[in-house]
Image 1 (tube, helix red, strand yellow):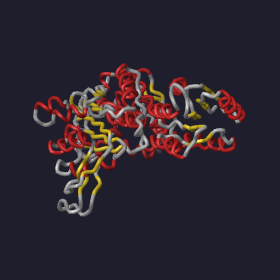
Image 2 (cartoon, helix red, strand yellow):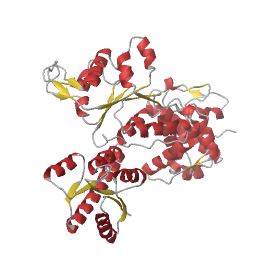
Image 3 (tube, one colour):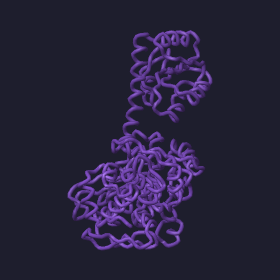
Image 4 (spheres, one colour):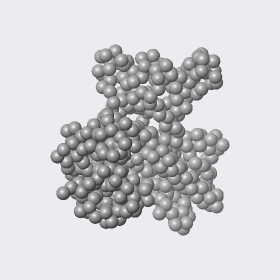
Length: 471
């Protein structure tokens, strides 16, 4: 049920508004002062606030400002018996949805309440849709490390403090940056991402600050840089440790003065940007090596959030694996497969050098290649194609594929010997078909039904890969 809070020091006004709104099936809470009103807003899930302006202890404008600082999307309708155009304009500037004079016209009040609630719903739905479009995932896991990260995000996101996110590739640094933006007052403005490692050093300054037409040979028109694009929003500088020293100097100036100058330009442009940086490098070591500026490091690292590798929080693997399993099965429009307890234990034992990104890819591979449930044998066979070699006493070699043999060394395939992605896929398909045939006692008909291909097609695959039943 929609919950409306009335803050007004006149009992008669509170009673009248309560009676009208409850008749319209709204749930109503009321209080006679702004301090208690703020406490209710912090504690309860309020959908709309009707707030008087002239009150003792704390006036309505103060309540409005403080409430929107931690709940920026909460609709406020300001009410006053001394209404003026100036007051209405001031309330609007501070973020109020509308302003109504006392005594309120009941029809106008109800229409304003309905419109304000619809706007609040639209704002919420828009944020949800933006999150879906941008594929912002939840930060999954119950480990102590993940709980600390979530708590830090909750505390830091509402501020403008700069954050440095550290951690190995694939550990989820970008996700932390996205949630810092999503939970901030800047969430309605853009989050602009720059991968500093992917941009050549001679182009990074143009990418960040933009350039004027004719400033260099290929500058055929003016370009707006990432700092300007992120105005009033968040700029995420990924892999900041790979940024050139000259670009670092300009970023430092932008952070110090909130001003930038386009390449080839002279005009200073004011920007209002929150910067979040991320790196997989030890920046203190980079400073010692002369590759990173210490003053920039201190500017960026007001708050440091370290995302640990998956090997340091293996208790999160079941939660992550089940989530990815449901996600991938939904994408493929197939029933969600069950991951057995033994398979979960097998997943926990893997090295996870690629962290969360590797786990997601591995779950997708297991879903494609396994039966109705994912077992520990599936993990050993398919999670890493090289693990299938544990079933062989002799090195495995590809046969009759038209490609070079692929030996298995130390129970791992020699990836350097795969000449193409198709070559690798053939290797994996051969191992999968062999596993299924052995499992079904080389009953070709049953195997074809299990893997959902025609028997004639399966016979062709057996011939292609030179598969033979072992005596």
